[in-house]
Length: 94
Image (tube, rainbow, N blue to C red; front, side, top):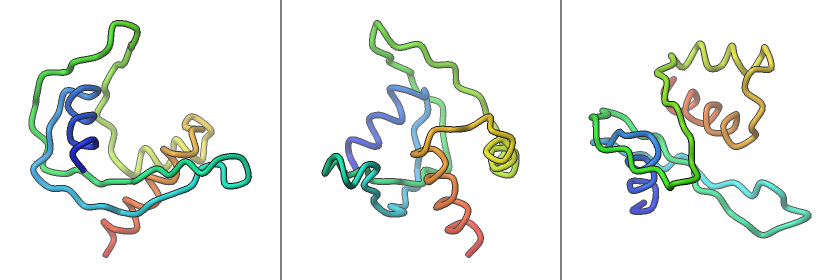
């Protein structure tokens, strides 16, 4: 959780007041035992983005429904992002 909080601020320039652990995934089960924890961060507040010198990230606010549409249109292809959005929509719909 502490790593997730730190990474959110460092990479997006936002902190969150509410956190929910949505689950854990093994992205490449036949190849690696790496595990990735998926969190939903809400009630965001601006913070100081602190990227590494070799990182280039542009943060954009996108509605969840629009992000799901982007998945269907092939604009979002990253598996971790797709899984995270799926898990978040399931939690938010409860």
